[in-house]
Image 1 (tube, rainbow, N blue to C red):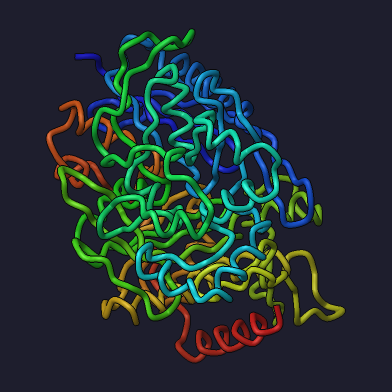
Image 2 (cartoon, rainbow, N blue to C red; image 1 turned 180 degrees about the horizontal axis):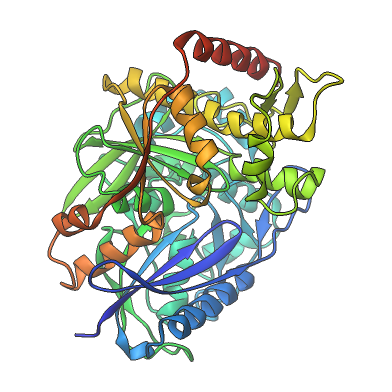
Length: 492
């Protein structure tokens, strides 16, 4: 059998490819950023051509870095930015519109219209989601309502639609497979998560024809094989697929009910494994499919923070107070506290548990003594405080006390942020040696399907902790922080 697994990690700002060996060691990596398109305030788009070209570049770079031949790849796993929606021509693969990105807020009016019709409860019951522009279904509704010719193409069978995973599988298989996995499908507002099937009533409410949607498969099976690519040989199975946050939950070996992780990326995403039954939130969290394996569906509670690492990017690109994103740690550490400064980074609305699409960011508590260092520290505190809101809601919904939180993603390398997170939530923060858990989850799902690994016990053995951050903040100080935060959020 060929010796390696290739994981494609298609993210919001860049695409990455990683080559894993049998011991889950990374043998090679490749990465390429791509354009962010902002047609109007609050609108975010990607060009599907840019996404595909960045994936191709990253795969080539990863194979070169690993010093292996493409024929050495046993299987391919895909993990992806989830709610972003792509439309393309089924014959040519040509995009029919720019991808509408998960961050995009253009469908806010459609969400409000559906709420006025009294449909929010039905969507929540079937999908586990809230009516928010975040999710794919309202983005599709906007496209059909606002882009001339799309309805006609859909009726004529001249359109396919899907999240980024579907688009990549279509491209990798030379147009032979139109498929998604249960975890990605559960993010669309179109899937009945108990039946794990598209729902005709939800599709009608959104004006989305079911015929354009992909087949819903498990998270680990052969969806198709590479075909007609210049950079990979024909016949490599694409056999693992999960949305980025569910892949990270799997890669963190969160296999038991109550296990929980937080991925620090552009946003931050907290998921708790709730086992074989969906737990419907009373605190406006999301109920989602974690993965489907061997006919069994595992569910999770999720809280999504739209702006986490993006807040640091804004300090870099918008305010210019740091030159590189990692510089924020040293700048924030140069002061003992934020000196009363509170940032609410609602740069794209507020996600869970607030779900206020029209909220906007603010910085309060500024004095003549406020410096860029205080603002930098307030930004890190804001990332942690948003996560605290979600953790408290998860504890209430699940009845499970969070004593430890596994972390991953680029910003988990920021030791100051991890300590702040531990202090403010009052729990241990556990960072693994390998923080590429999203890609590792995709690789492992792919390998399971082709017999490269025998079962989840192998990933549990491979997972190793790097460092544990324990709370050092006094309860009274934590309480004061939370009170200031809640006051500021109320003003956003």
